[in-house]
Image (tube, rainbow, N blue to C red; front, side, top):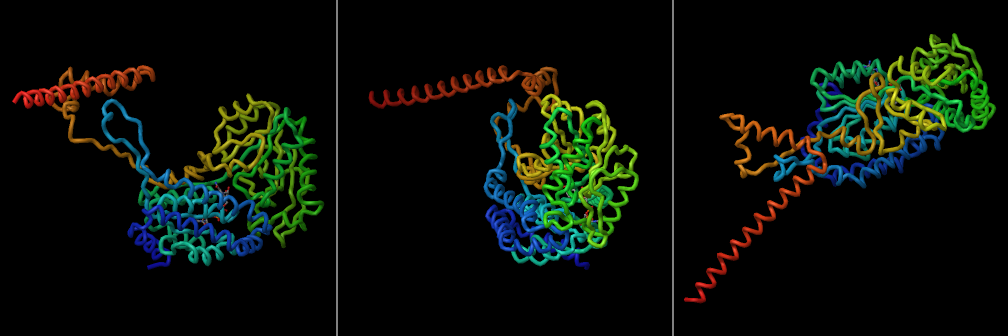
Length: 505
Ligand code: NAD
């Protein structure tokens, strides 16, 4: 039996004990995870420094603070989320119990990526624990040091039988994918996403694919360019551009291109000094393979800012490319590095057409003071999410679902969305063995009269307006009240008669 097979079996056995059913168990696991984050901050940050040259503050800001917030939110709300949820009734179910019972799915496989390795691996784990599942955790081998730290630390804090960590590369992941799971939660690129879906089809396992793509950023002439470019520069160059929702490219009118370039140049200097290479807040490309890939994207475009690089350190300076043609290399794939191409478009219509001719992105950014334009972009384009007048921060709003559409992924999570996504929302209808008369209309022999009653109950009610429904309910309430009053009256009449005769005797 392979190591991967053993891990899955261990998790399945642990799940079968039923201990995840207890909300107290889930909360204890989440509290332990929180303790891990608090107590092991230094080990987490040191590993990320080695993997991505991330600063300690950067690690807290971009990874662990969000996880702590997510855990706190789950602990606060778990009892409410896990409780039966009353569902709307109709005329036929008026006296029944109708509700949704969230239930754990079973064993979840979580496959993480390397760019924010804690955030994208542990955030789904929080959802899996909250929903009462077991989980096999497969961190990305690309963030070598972080993967090792996860393998060492997680079993010290959370139930290692229920949540085993499996490290390794492609072959280990493929071995895992041969096993049976109840859900697979994958974060990474589209090409591997397709392999995941293929493997999942063997057991009809549902999948969540958190993928990437080219997220466009439209800048309207009518906006404060200084603030817009500051927020774009932050969104683009954080983590050296290796963010799934980084603004991939800018679309703007040619008349503002030069100002955009100058504003971004100023921000790069403000954020990372004149020499980003020696700035502790500026990161590195994850490895030489990705360094070469990103550098090759520069080939047929014109540099406006940056371009300096050093292969030995996987360093690429914050870069802006101007007058980029749609056919340029940099426009053929997700950049996932610190290059910002600017593509000139002469109108909003052209920008919308440009976006709609390409794969659906994970995020769409719009910078404008015109609310109508924001609404138009939202309604005329399709993307995982939309953020107007800022970058990245929609990721941290846990009341919003986070996920892609089309090529940028399927399924969404964060906060309650994670809980629901990793639960089976079981529909429950509890009837009594009474009121059999109401069922006559569905039993044979079928007659036109019975059908007309069925039509009334099944269709008329749905067609009634809210007011009509209220009137109908009111009428039913009046009938019920009359029946109750009559019953009470008859009851007292009977007893008074009895007392009368008793006194006579
Ligand atoms: P990666 O190379 O770390 O791969 C992700 C996981 O897939 C790893 O655990 C790896 O072991 C596994 N894997 C790789 N090749 C495989 C194969 N052939 N068969 C089976 N498993 C395999 O990460 P990546 O794909 O380079 O990540 C970057 C991509 O992820 C970008 O496209 C980015 O936009 C996307 N991403 C998306 C999100 C999101 O939340 N939507 C977050 C982060 C990254």
